Length: 636
Image 1 (cartoon, rainbow, N blue to C red):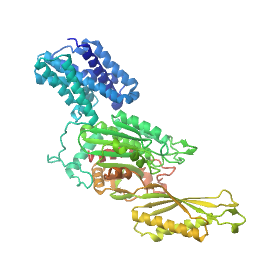
Image 2: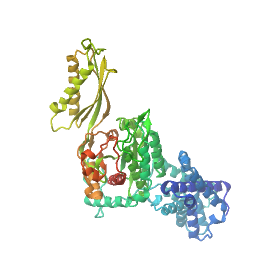
Image 3: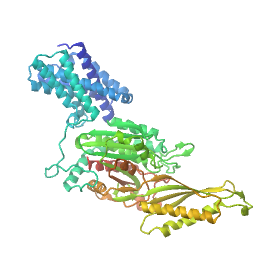
């Protein structure tokens, strides 16, 4: 039975879109070769109709009697194979075409079933099968739980469109107009589902006794029960089962990042690579957030929203590791190095993002993966928030992040409460009176003044802060003068202060200002000193309940490789993200040092920001990837 030209055109459009989508899945998820891409694309486009024809006894299936459909399906697959990256710009248009195909397929499938004498209910089911069967076969072929079974709002529109078709036939009004109406209704419902992220209700998880599990709360949540922990450990093991095979790219990706570091606010290459990887795993991707930030969103039915974060920027350090993939990059003539392990963070989060996307049948909720620029200068997180982050993503229930540290590789460590210090960098300028080096009596020497300030500042922590209150005050730089026989007219002192409470921070800053002002007066400085605060990091104060949840999940998965972290005087701006959403957060450490080297003692262990800091690739990457997955699944 030939179709009217309009329906035929719509049918071929849908076939092309289905072939395109199926092939894109092959390219993104499992990186098949040309034959594999063609197979998966044509399976997606034609599989539903073939299944329908087999079930109703219409043999050989109509697809094999009309080469046009085979050609259009193959054409869509070939387009996806050759220009998959460029197609990302037309993702919305492809979704529209796909919805058109869904509408037309459910109508033609139902009407053909009725033509072969089937009842109304059977025709509705076969209409929906025609529309979603190809996608289901595709997902089974790549060992993924079919999307129509995991709360995606896809089968429902097809069922509605098929039901309207059966209704029109039973009323005796079926024709081109009614067929278009049924297809249009299916199309509209599908697009509304895409626009508003509609999902079919999913069953709640159950505890070990078969009772519905308590919904995952946010701040102040109760401790996870033993049965929930066992279940989450089992799910994590399943998600991570083929980590080595699925992430065969990860080590080379890390080496590439390490060899091509980028300074804060310049992470364009890194951001591009991250966005490409996320699209391959079917994340909704937002780029250039806060300059170079990248955010991926993966909605997977009802449930909590978890934010996982990695930082991307490097440091102005000359690498001295001697590694074959050591950085030789420069920026404005200055050497650049991933001396703080942010390359590890990026590679681990991308690996976790892929594994979670490949196992959507084992969790429910929304996963947000955020790749942040400019952590080293303390304004990257705030920059993303100021650039509209809160409007781009659903409000998370919890924010999670990690950092590679000079601990044995393969270990993870957590700490509730204040974990990383608040940090304030300060520039102090003191003024003198310049003169010839041979006539110091004519000068007010700012070099001597600055030296006295540096000595006196050492008493702040030693004599003004209680011994049990961790505090660090470091003078990192003194700059004055240009020549040995010239007494300059000013000196610049750079300080870094680390504290764990606002009270201590205020006390230290007040003491600094008091000492500097007094020394300037004692030296008859002609001008008041100048104070400038910059690169200000907040304290990382881990939510006790959320951290306990992560720690329990780590204990279940890592065993004795999970332990306590304690307090570190390093600083982070990760908490600015959580503060912007007013949500709890947990931040933990992973080891990156060869265990044998670590055992030899601290003198041999390079610390973060050292020119010799280079985490061992394994088991660091595997551990970091596992930690992110395990922590996320404690909520999802």
